[in-house]
Image (cartoon, rainbow, N blue to C red; front, side, top):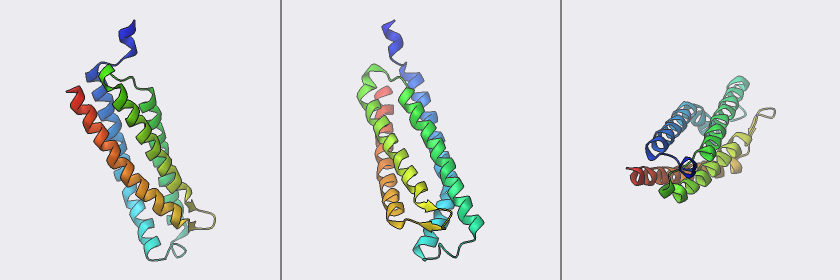
Length: 147
């Protein structure tokens, strides 16, 4: 019975790989919307954007936040092999922090006023970059330990 408490290393690696792939695909899908709003912010033209385009960007951000929430929840539910318990704990925390940073970015967009809280947006962007880099380092470490 005790063996069931921990994951098979191969199964863990497959699940982690799927989670990373889903995260990367979602990030790629939202990238064009991020670039549009980043350009509008940098050129101080957020207020000049068509309302429908600003709303679409906000919806895309909200959609990717949901994907990341599910990924964070899935990661929390995953069982790790015994030798990866510590690494898995770090993965969970880093990805949860990453998810929180994506929430902050989505919340920085105010569709009703068509405004962006630039300070919160910029901080979220920095946090996301740093946290994703850290997450991917931890993922590589986990895969090295599994193999």
